[in-house]
Image 1 (cartoon, rainbow, N blue to C red):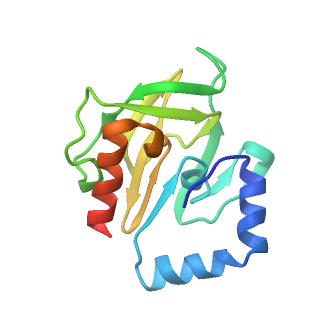
Image 2 (tube, one colour):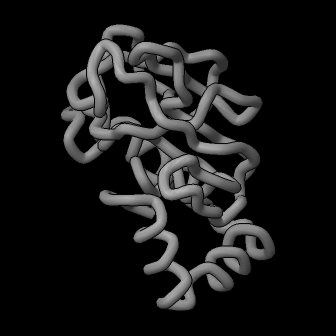
Amino acid sequence: MPGIGAFDAGMARLTESGLIPLLNEKVLVEKTPLLGICLGMQLLFEHSEEDDADGIGLLPGTVERLPPAPSWPHMGWNTLDASSAHPLLDGVTDDDWFYFVHGYAAPPSDATVAKAQHGDAFAAVVAQGNVHGVQFHPEKSGNAGRRVLANFFALA
């Protein structure tokens, strides 16, 4: 589930298009693997401080505004700090860089597979069952991003 834009607009589009019941059916009942990218990852959570809006709720927690320092929003390259081994990160090293563009992020939680740092630590990769998310843009992250996408497709 890709995403660029504002949280409330993203949820409005999903609601208007009737995709939320379909997502719940496919993900929760049929156990179809899902990967949320950037805003798509944020929409997986229960709520966001951005526009004080409710999300899909496939992952527990609230997406929060990033701190203003070192800059806001977070735009640019960053590495990941893997907190546990996960197939989504097979072949990804501490030296790999990923491209981020966001002003909001989920704080680290039990679903966090890898964190990144921008002022504070935030969840950069999440996974819970068949629900996965990456805060960065793998399609803009070169070989490292292709590796993450290939790993997801192997899981799917």
